[in-house]
Image (cartoon, rainbow, N blue to C red; front, side, top):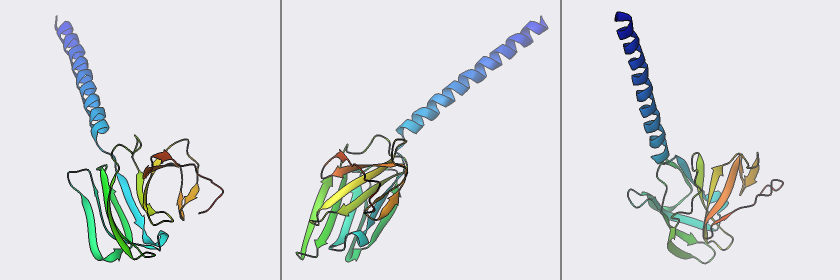
Length: 174
């Protein structure tokens, strides 16, 4: 009789442990799925010599990251866990001596997987804003250059003004 009670207790403890382990694993994976991944916001004025960035705000409509100044902003590099819905920027086109402010809607333009990604603000040849996302992918090129900066194992998606995957010429250092 004592052996059966010990056996019963041992089986119950195994079932109890398995049940708690299963509950813990489910909660862990649900928590990972609902947490926004870390990504970097990046801007470098050296790559846009005809533009002065005067202010910016990157936000998910709750708590914005922002910077405004009377002097041109030379560099932005910050890490965020919040995926933005918009990017509001104020810049000066040095060719036209014109100051513009624009709110760029980037809602739902991001790739599904944003862990270790980079959101990059730049300006095109007409000094208009463009936003790219560099995101990890096992099918991406091992190494490439994009606007003077090296990347590896990343794919590139333009999310403003167009939403499109960008084809990379791995032989070109631009």
